Image (cartoon, rainbow, N blue to C red; front, side, top):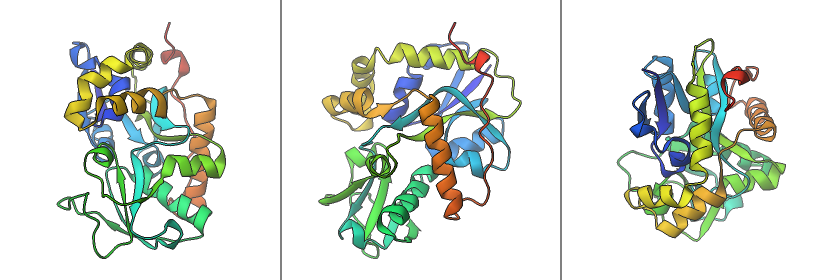
Length: 269
């Protein structure tokens, strides 16, 4: 049975809601940083992978353009919380659930503020609503930004900062597969599910917001207005731009070419 690996956050629900009732596929949920292992270990056939992992994985991957998670400005849920002015931040405790967000943090602070940050992992046992005493700021992603973020007045949304810097959208994660994998009808299923769910945002938010710790009205705005799920040429260009900046700053050591899964198998007919 074909298997799908998906992010366990609210932001992925418009891409996958309904698959739990589809007897022809299996879907597994995890935090973004863990999904790559399942894909490389062949536990899953296709997964919603942070875009930086395309460049750092020990196997070559391809992007399946059936959708992704991105924004064209504010994300709301990829955010720096600080006790110091943004331009004075030097030390950041980072939420390791998404390596893409950590890389974006470094790009933004280098290109906008001329700062090379000292990063430390945010302990899994740390309460995200308490800023560690030995850092200036914390980077949080996902539902915890809404449910348990630090109560600090100085904040920076990294999607908004990228838009201000480049004029481009930002893509945090896309569907990916191992290069050469026969995905059969799975890409088309994902495309159809995304298109179907884009007309069900209020229903999807109502089904998932409470469990994820979100107020319903904010969840509807987040899923229906702030986030973007299509993966077109502009989004692919933004991904390549981000990879190039990561290479230039030494965040990644090389630059693999962008490989797109056969579009004929992705199209919704």
